[in-house]
Amino acid sequence: MRGLRRLTVSLAFTIAGVAAAAPLEGSEAAAPRPNVVYILSDDVGWGDLSCHGGSVPTPAIDGLFDTGIELTSFMSWCVCSPTRAMLLTGRHPIRVGTGPRVGGELPADETTIAEVFRDAGYRTGIFGKWHNGDEPDTPAYRAAFAEAWKDFPRKKPRFGLGVNAHGFDEAWVYYGGGGDFFTRRNLRNLGPVTWWHNRELRPDDTGYTEDLIVDRACEFIQASAGKPFFCYVPFHLVHEPLQAKEEDLAAVDPAITDPTKRAYAAMVHAMDTNVARLLTTLAAAGLRDNTIVVFTSDNGATPRGNNRPLRGSKHSLYDGGVRVPTVIHWPAGGLLGRSWNGLCSGLDMLPTLASLAGVSVPIDLALDGKDVSAALRSGGATPVDSMYWAWHGTDALRTQRWKLHRAASRVDLYDMDADPGEETNVAADHADLVADLTAQMDAWATSLAVALTHKPPRIDGAAAPAGDVLEITVTVTPESKPDDLLVVPFATFEGDVFATDHLTVDLTTMPGSLESGFFISPLEYVRDTVEPAFRKGDGIDQFGREQAAGPPVRGGPGTWEHRVVGLSSLAPNNQLGLACVFRGGKSGTYTIRIDNASIRHLDGSTSPIWTDASHSQARPIRNTAAFTNVKVRTVLFR
Image 1 (cartoon, rainbow, N blue to C red):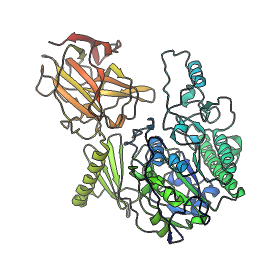
Image 2: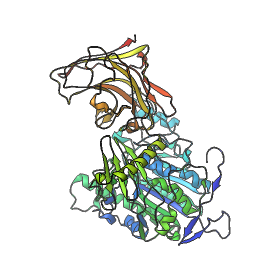
Image 3: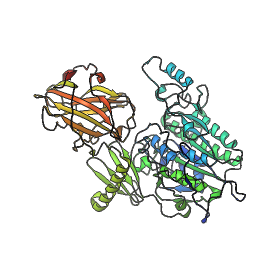
Image 4: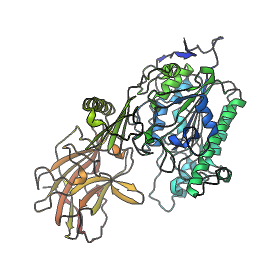
């Protein structure tokens, strides 16, 4: 474990309902410590499994659910990277800089579940998708990157710590997400092959990704030689691209004729086959009874899959996006043959698995997760009070019974006992409860210091233009319509943006200018277009104004205003474009000035986006029927 040696506390655990202290290592009476195999499927929805009514048979996984303890209220994040960080650290993904969106580099000073188990004498291995950081800096990877992007010489690699730096002895992984199943090239076939053994790039390994993952995981299990192990197997299946092997396609019901549905069904079949391979390897090695096996998913299914009867899907805070099929199975430990409905999540896996295994956790490790092992064994109440998410213009809180969704202009409340499909909003009937749950949400948000884009920031400031300022002039024609938008990019910030950061900018309108209908917004890629990230309900400044509505500068023309907006919906991010966006429907000419566009970080420091002429990245914009005479220049503030 990194840094100074930590004080530790030995957790207690219970076997078959009898409390027992965790055995001391080296004790003659000590029972063998259990192994752990944690299988994290990718984009598998609640209804994708045949034990939950799915149309594709999943007998191996069903067997785990039939004989283990199903965790029927197990929560993830609505995308993959944050869920993985929850498991690895036991800490909220926003707290460790890996949420709410995908991406982010897990910090070096975060203690991981692999380090906790390795310090207890376990062999640790990871086999599959990492997606909690970038590829390590090696000569081979630099060369591969340069070759893959040789037609784009300005494209620079971003390097990460590498998986082994986080406590894994053995790693066969790919970085990022959505890679080709046969070539392991990145999404859209861009960039180099990213398939690694520890810090060795292995671009020439052939085969289907899931086969390579499970081959190596099985080898790791077989090589345990009597030493306990922690084996993390983050599958690639059933994430897009939809690519299946011929033998898996051949196993699909012939009645499924649609090519897309056949490919998805084949991938579900392949996932189950590979789970069976892991279980068979454990059994052949005589390790099945004393291995804790967890099967779960990183988020709900995409619209390609099946989340029924839950509402929503991946990229949604409804339970279809964040409640995932999960089972824990340990015959020797008595975790068998029932279900448990206690609220829990990936946050709780580090302390829970450590407790079950009798592994010491650093006493000063500040976890958001709770040890639910006692409740798992007894079937009793969960110690977890709530789970909190923030995502694209909303945040949500789940307790054992209630789910509260909050957006800029509405609050929805669902009784999850009576309405697990989140169909009936009962907020109007429970005003006191809404107030209590809102206070809990606010406590979470304050604890995480999350800069919500859909709530007014609690920070302010004074405008301080000086020296160079940016001036943008645009004429809006009578032919324009209210839905017409003109996006004028003017700068890019190439640096890390976290969910705790704010965008700050000084701006004014000049005398004679149109006064409203424009706003400053970060940019994001939507399919093959660039669009303003601030849209209806997402981009609320410290005065409570929605940026997409184009609020006027307070004080009128000639008065400078300091504007602050949270950036949680855009984080993590390492290249934030910034633009001035003009709305049509009201003819006339805008002349606006901008200065001190910056990222304000949690510690109060700032990173400039546009503070002087050296930051300008404007490009010519053609006249259209709606907008003409676009000019971007730098002038001296007077």
